[in-house]
Image 1 (tube, rainbow, N blue to C red):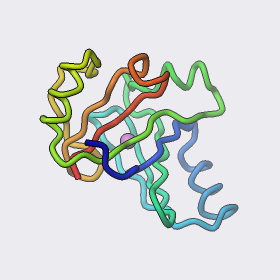
Image 2 (tube, rainbow, N blue to C red):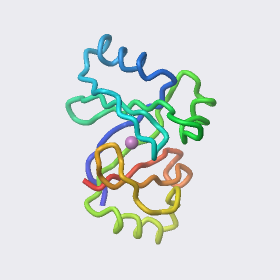
Image 3 (cartoon, rainbow, N blue to C red):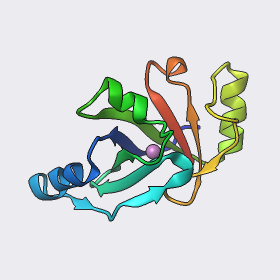
Length: 134
Ligand code: CO
């Protein structure tokens, strides 16, 4: 069921500063910022050879990463995103096994224009897991 690691997401308090660290200090290829109002974040992708790093900054009043940043003011690893071939089949298999899907359980469109779902961190060794239909 589990495909490749699509990205590792890091929540950051200052997207501009975080982008500069990756672009200037680490010499990485960093995308332009993209606002995702439906997800309450502004996102930048850092392209590395075998995956991507997603830098997330809160957007709007009720950003889902606001409380994470309250607990981790300098930022921190927020979620892992794995690719799946069929997101609805993956969801049904995981919920049948007792895993909890966040939100209303229906896929939303993610930063790559593809359907995504988030799985409860308590069901996955303390790590928030995103599934993206590849
Ligand atoms: Co993500």
